Amino acid sequence: MFDEIREASGTFSCPSCGARPLWDPEAQQLKCPFCGSMSEVEMDRTPPAEYDLEGAPPARALDWGEQKRVIHCQACGAETILGPGESATLCAFCGSPHVLEDQSAAGIAPESVLPFSVTQQSAVSSFRKWLKGKFFAPSKAKKMAALGQIAGVYLPHWTYDSDTTSDYTGQAGHYYYVTVPVTVQRNGKTVREMRRERRTRWTPTSGRVYSHFDDVLIAGSKRLPEKLLSRVRPYELSRLCRYQPGFLSGFSAEKPSVNLAEGWENAQRVIDEEMRQLARRDILSHADEAQVSSLRSEHENVRYKLTLLPMYLSSFTYKDKTFHVLVNGQSGKCGGEAPISPLRVTLVVLAALAVIALGIYLYYRAGGRFDLDEIVRFANYVEIDF
Ligand SMILES: [Zn+2]
Ligand SMILES: [Zn+2]
Image (cartoon, rainbow, N blue to C red; front, side, top):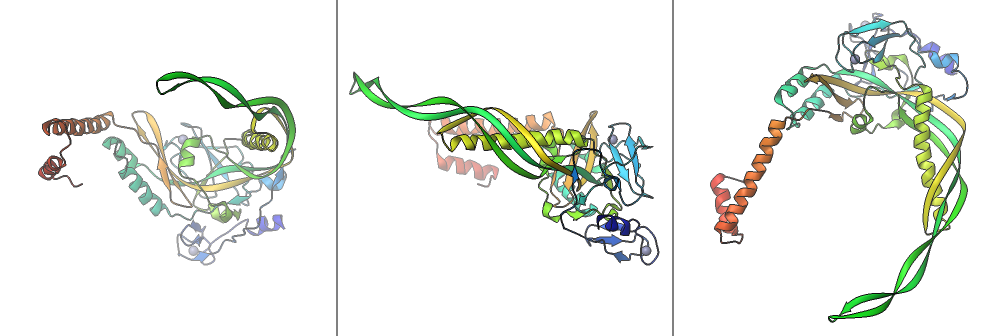
């Protein structure tokens, strides 16, 4: 059944004129750029296929349903996947015009896609609003940012499933109470009293915990720092659709720069963190406090898939440094980096100091106490609204 879907959607063209239609995020359909005809793409939300981590990916995992090309950015190293007839003159990640077509294969095809639902136009207005709010950014940098292009790119994400069993060692803490003499001051006299105090007795412990992990999501891109990506999350993953080449029409996709094995390394770190919490809870079921000192995990039935999530990217260069701005292609949430102007920060600090100095002046003028009438009179004089 899986292969049938791929075959049926292998090529798509406008039903009226035969041109290549583009994905329209607003209509959630394909739209022909020449005659305006709309055509549907099947939006199948049944769980997509996942592959065994052991061994090479099966041939069908490499099938994109149509011919793809890879372009390589000579400036930042990003590899972007394009469909037939699509071209890119600028790198979506750094804005460099030094992009070259590469002979490498597109690699593992995505199993599922979160189709773009934010239009380029609304991404641009979301970006402008964000830029307006960047009070500390130098106006020159703002101008550079406003000039930059904004491109819709599907970012690769790996998901991993695993049945994990972890053996742990640690310490179980049990509370006990002791009565100890203490010296205290009572009515100006030093007296000795007895006081009950809590202590913890630690004993070595070990055990085994088990958990099933479903779809541990790991970013497949090294181009954008995790800190930046997290600013525009979350994505509503229940809207993921089975991959169809039509969803990508008019958009590019990044070829994963974190490969399958590296992604699995990162996933194991996420899994181990959770297993550590489970081990702690396991100790706490028979102790008052817990410490986990070592953890060794075994993973079984590890399966993976590649998913594409929609993102609008813009970048600008200011003083030889590249800054990125992102807009979530599903929610429209915008986040990014911007340089800080030392001059603007200084002006704000000086203004704050002036306000403090004024407060102190008013305080002393009122004879060392805060005279509310005086402050209101002054506020009226300089037209400050409380
Ligand atoms: Zn047409
Ligand atoms: Zn680049």
